[in-house]
Length: 202
Ligand code: URA
Image 1 (cartoon, rainbow, N blue to C red):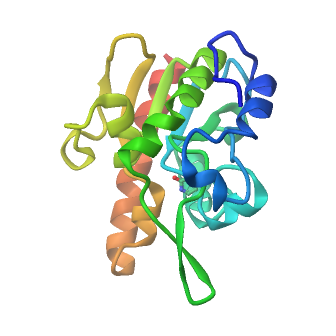
Image 2: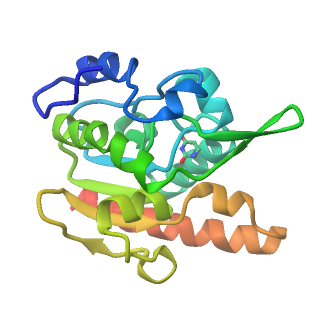
């Protein structure tokens, strides 16, 4: 793996990231799941890390959380084909439970080892807005003190980065304890994404 540089194109970055061994997750992940979308996309969504389905397919947000994201994007009037979608960490971190592979949160070392790829994607795409989905992405880009629960839904600036915005991770909606809570959480997620859509349409 050659380290990501700000000058590389998305196809060059994707190819270089495919052999990344900057942390140990390459040993247990099936493949690097690089971001997807066009350079010049107005908005970039950053999740935590690929899940089981994404690890197998090699594409971000194609499993259950991706379906929640797709539904919310439709409701907010954002075309998924026009956005760039990626993750803070590009290998699936998991632990075995019987035959299942259970998601494990990436640690600070794994997040920082993967950071050059995210920075290079931002430099190549040059989005107007980055939407952080959940605490891992928000804390990576907005700082470790950032709390999605109290600071979601605001446009924020950080030196050297496009405008930032944080909301919940769609998998948190899937984990809601009952249908009513799930509907309320989905409505709040759509409200947040609608703020992003309005900002993009300005
Ligand atoms: N969760 C994420 O954070 N990213 C994905 O790509 C899928 C699930």
